[in-house]
Length: 403
Image 1: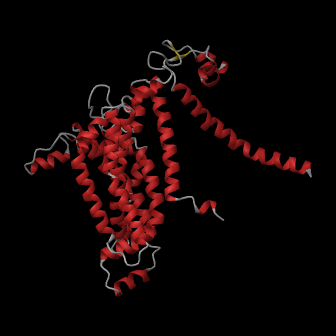
Image 2: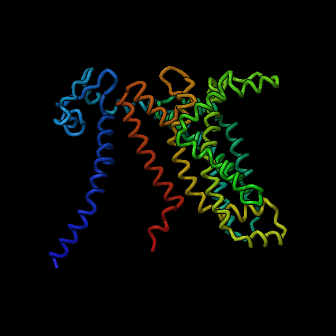
Image 3: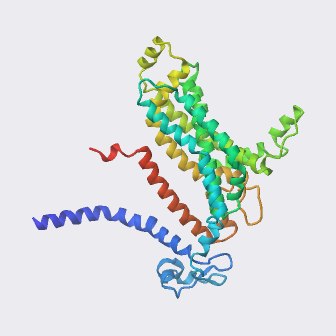
């Protein structure tokens, strides 16, 4: 019995060994090397590893005997940073100062009504005699957000945060981009899905045409150059405005306008994913529910909020999470249109220098490998925590682990 059990265990191990080796080589090792590099002072003048250090001998390929002939790099050897967390301190900057933390608290307070509206709606959905509609709750919440933003001073709090370290600036701008882009993409995708789900003449042709941007997203950085041309100072958009007697703005030289152009372009790239997902969910809703609602005299808005949105929610939630992740990792659109600019100050990330653009610039344009890897470690920890939180909140994997 023991011999059979041993052979069975050996067989399982041999089957799993390629996967385990792949995890070690392509996942665990890069994480360890990246973490080690984040504590070093490696930059464009320090490119050669100090192979006397034990960690360098083990982790850095340039110190391995098999690559010994390639270790003749130019520049001084890089070493462990002194103090140890210097790269992390640079990235966080003045984030833990009193004014910065107060500004973060103020911004959080401004958006508390939206969280409260979500909780209130969930409680009221359990009440058959609902005293107030969901729409009214959200209208009140949005009005409260606008009032708090005015009283507290959203602009001042935002400007204070933008004066902290690069990590906070880049992450905050990226989260702001995701918070704007994902809801707008959902609304646009929902509208098109509702149209395509109706008796629209030639809707199969429209489905193909509307899906084109999703195919173009595979070469986003190239298509983004077309968007850059459209919003160039002397580009087609400003020429059309000029024909109407309007002086076109310098779209890509204004931080706010450049941010808006990136949002618009990325919505164009991304709406087909939401559109197809929602269209599939719409076609699974029984038509009898809408017929019964028509008999009861329900309006279009009531049918949308009481039937359509609740029933497509299981399909939309995972799609929203995936879209948020891809939006957070967006690179091609921003880099192709603005390269992260326009600049807002010396040693300050650009107005559209989102997470991936900032990491790319630090490595390939400024050769600050130590800072870039510290930035990557912090992003990894933040996304890991956010993923665990989203799985707990949305319970996407709940059915997979329950018998």
